Each structure stands twice: as C-alpha cells, then as structure tokens.
View 1 (cartoon, helix red, strand yellow):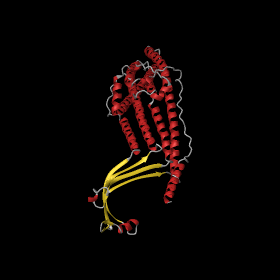
View 2 (cartoon, rainbow, N blue to C red; view 1 turned 135 degrees about the horizontal axis):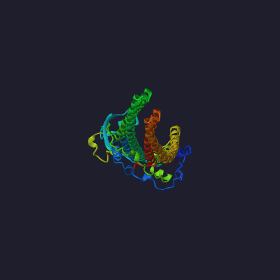
View 3 (cartoon, rainbow, N blue to C red; view 1 turned 90 degrees about the horizontal axis):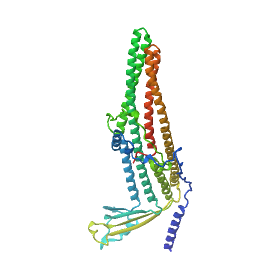
View 4 (cartoon, rainbow, N blue to C red; view 1 turned 30 degrees about the vertical axis):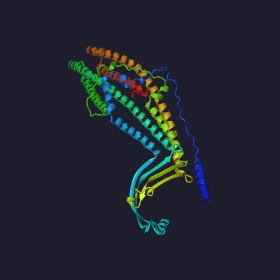
Amino acid sequence: MRNRQRVACVGITILTLLTSGCSVPRLVPKAENKTVPTRFNNASDSTNTAKTSWKAYFTDPNLAALIDTALYNNQELNITLQEIAVSNNEIMARKGEYLPFVTVGGGSGVEKVSRYTSQGAADAVTDIKPGRHTPDVLPNTYVGAFASWEVDIWHKLRNARKVAVFNYLASIEGRNFQVTNLVAEIANSYYELMAYDNQLEIIKRNIDILTNALSIIKQQKEAAKVTELAVRRFEAEVYKTQNLQYDVQQKIVETENRINFLVGRFPQRIQRSSVNFGDLNPTKMYAGAPSQLLENRPDIRQAEHQLEAAKLDVSVARANFYPSLHLSASLGLMAFNPIYLVNTPESLIASLIGDLVGPVINKNAITAMYKNANAKQIQAVYQYEKTVLNAYIEVANQFSAIDNLEKSYSTKNNQVQALTQSTNISLRLFTSARADYMEVLLTQRDVLESRMELIETRMRQMNAMVNAYRALGGGWK
C-alpha cells in the first residue's frame, strides 16, 4: 500500500513539473529584414572593389609598409585578439557544462552522533565487531570517485554553447571590422600628410613671391610711386603667410604622430614621397550589388552573429521553465579504520541518484530573464537592420563624393590656372604703373587660397576613395 502511495506521489510530482513548463509566457519575437535595394544609385555593375585585398589596392610601398606594421603592432587590435581568445575559452566552458563532472578524492575524520537519533540508537545496540560495541566516537576514512551530470533534456546547455560560438564568431568579425577601419584611417592620414607637405611647399613659394613683390614695392616707394601704406600692407601679408606656414607644420607633426600611434610606435618621421601628390588619380571604384554588403562588411556579419546568439538566448531562457534532470553517482571505499579499506566488498560504497527539479511557484525571476532575452533579441534585430542601412548609405555617400569631387577638382584646377596667369599680369601692370598695389596683393592672396584648396580637394578625393573601399567592406582580407 505504501509503495503504491509513493509511486502515486512521484507520478503527481512529475506531472506537476511537466505541466508547469507549459505555462511559459507568450512573447512576440521579431524577424530581421534582410532585403536591400538592387543597386546603388544608377550603378548596375556586379564587380566589387571590396574583393581586392588592401595590398593590391594601396600600391604606394610606404603606405603598404605602414599598414603591414600596424596589423602587427597596433595595441587596440592586439587587445581585440585577446578578447577573441576569451570568447573561444567561453565555448570550452559552455561545452563542459553539459558533460558529466567527475571528481576523485578521499578524506578522513571522526564523528559522534547523538544517542537519541535513529543512527545513535542503532549504533548502541550494534557490535562493530563480534563482542565489541560500536564506540561513541567513530573514525571514518573514504576514497572514491564522484560524478554529477545535468541531462540536457531541453538543449538548454547545448544552446548556451551555441550562443558562445556565435559570440566568438561575432568577436572575429569585430576584429575584421577593426582592421578595415585601421587600414582606412592609416591611408587617410597618409594622404593628409602628403597634402600638408604640398600645401607647405605652396606657402613657401608664395612667401618667396611676396618677398620679391615687397622688394619691388619698396623700390617704388623710394621712387615716390607708392606710399608707406603699400609697403606695410605687403609686409603684413608676408607675416600672415609665414604664420600660415607654422600652422601647416604643426598639422604635419600631429598627423605623423597619429600615424605612429596607429602603427604602435613612438614618434618618428613617416617615410613618404609627396612630390607628385597633385598628379595622383583616385583608383576606379566598383560598387557591385548592395546584397554583397551582407557578405563583405564585417560589421554586418558581426551584427548577424550577435542576432543569432540573441535568438538562442531566448531558447535558453525559455528552457528554465521546464524541469531539469540531475544525476549523481559515487563509487568508492569507506571504513572506520584505513586498514579495512581493502576488505571488499564489505568496504565498498556506491550510489546513483536522480533528481527532477522544476519551478512551480514564484517564477518571477525566470520570467523576467525570459522577457529580457526576448527584448534583447528584438534589439539585435534593430541593430542588424541599422547596420545594413548605415552600410548602404555610407557606400552611396562615398560614391557620390567621388563623382562630385572629380568635377570639383577639374573646376578648381581651371581656377588656379586662371589666377596664376592673372598674378603675372597684375605684377607687370603694377610695375608699369597701370595697376594698383592692392590688385597685386589680392591676386596673390587668391592664388594662394586656390592652390591650397586644390590640394585639399585632391586630398578629399583620395579620402573618398579610401572611405568607399572601407564602406564596401574592403581592407580586412
């Protein structure tokens, strides 16, 4: 009768645990939208520049050497590599959770139980050996193996391991995206440095021209053809241009040091050849199809892996509502005296226990965890869609910049040529007293500004080329 009652109690307990798992809150997940436009603006080519490795894309040997050094020495990149190692170790830890835990050990001690307990009463009437009562203080020694295992019925532990795998893959893509940005930042800074070199050369040439013009103005003053005002105005313009020279020199120092920081070394001169910077032509870019961004952009792939991890986190949190089965077992030897440990099977101990445990009342904590996991999954969807949208807009902006800057450079170059000719004309006219000194001064100022802007436009062209390559997902392969 008692056995039937026990079986009935066990059955009721199991039924209660199983039915309690059916009361999981219903939440509405969100699916990601992976559709993108079929093309960028009016482009319809399938060739994608992102497929080109950075070594083939950046042909300047000095720039390539800087990038190659940075990929080994950059501290931020090396920090990320250690984070990837941590993510990989997390996979190992999660895998170990659904495998049996086995320990081997032993111990010894003494024990005195109360006479007024079931064990104490039994010991009082039991002989430990024939004719010898069980002592009140009883030593104990044991050695054995002990095992415990949570049976992964609902794949909670396996899904947790998959979450770790996706996080590991996301960390790798994060590192790839960091490489892409690092390559682009070094290239942009390198072209900026070359542009500053050319601007500094333009300023120095302009100082020479203004100095010569100042000498002419002084001669004109001595001949009483101009006043002291003209001399002072030209002197002020020389000082102004010299001050501009110092600003550019400071920019060169800061840009060099920014590159040195990215390369992971203390300040030193950056090797470059800036003589023909104005003749550089941006590499022809091919956008390919927008759908290729899903494959080429590391940040999109990172967001995708994080989304998959968030989906599995929901499954892991849902499994907490279901009962879990724990098994434990032990096998070893135990005796009140170590010399009796070898007396088997009398000293042999063994056990096998199974526990089925699940939440029934007060499931607030696991409900909150489940809702949080679902909310984070929805966040991951929006983050993924945001990353895709941002990537598309970046490509569209950079390709538009390439087109507009090419037209701007052509127009700006025509302006420089026209102003350069007007400079010679104004100086000749001034010498022959057919033009005012202000015309010479303003023309020289306009030429300087236009030449500086022309170099800056070329720099922006090169930066747009680099940024378009980065936006397409190039630079990490």
